[in-house]
Length: 119
Image (tube, rainbow, N blue to C red; front, side, top):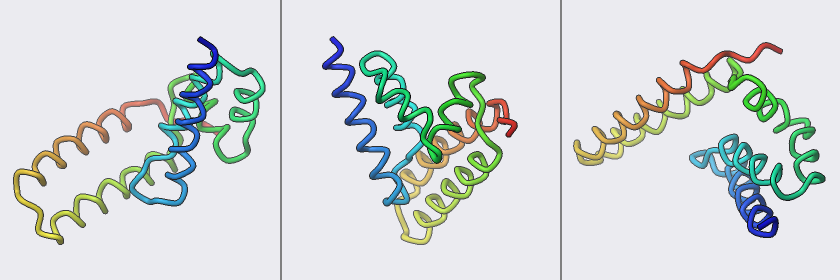
């Protein structure tokens, strides 16, 4: 079972690292998922990820209190707005824009109802 958890951890880590480069792929959710999988498979990888200077604080905030930093909330809000505005500018069908609006609104409601991490 540890091999399965580790494999899923590395896949999540890879997706998160892709998200660092590609603006529409989320990074932190994949890193949270990787931390979850590594906690069940590899103490070394789990420690590396949670102590990482860039990813570690967000993971620790989420694991300890379900909190998201104010900077993270703001950046996610901006990213969602950019995606929605881009869809409108590109002239996507109104039905697709409506689906995006509902989905992104749910994401924003979830995100902004989480506690704000204090640093």
